[in-house]
Length: 194
Image 1 (cartoon, rainbow, N blue to C red):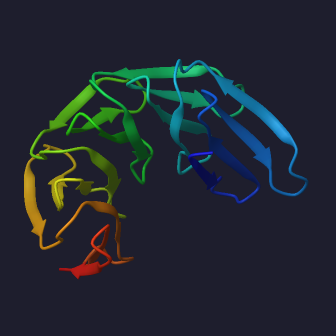
Image 2 (tube, rainbow, N blue to C red):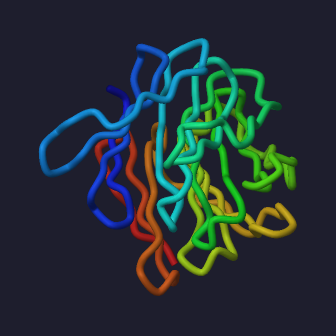
């Protein structure tokens, strides 16, 4: 199991697995509610949309799929990365998806149509995570190139580069007011940034 995330209402969990599926589970009794099949390689990440009506999955098969959480039907397939897609996340309003790939890029997509909005190409190694700020205006990416970067979520313009880690940056999070970010690294440190 590569990832596990609660639904917004806390009643379900979606898991992503090396068995090429994502699965939806009932939190109260642990019962399997639905299996999402369609990826041709391991699923690395799965997450509910903010309204709980959709699920996004990313895979080693270089694709991202958007699913209807009620029916299990594929709504959109995002193709354009050239290597594993490590993670995918919805914007707070659920209208966009940010993806992070081992091909050293991140991308912004329209969640409904699957159309590519912007290509984020300033990293020099695998991008591990791409997350939206809570107001949806920025995206932060973290990479094995020892940096994190902050981007404009509309234009895809690079706003800031966070340098200081000595090894790969693994994850990041925005504070509740979007004024600070924290990054974690394989250099055994976490750093807090403006």
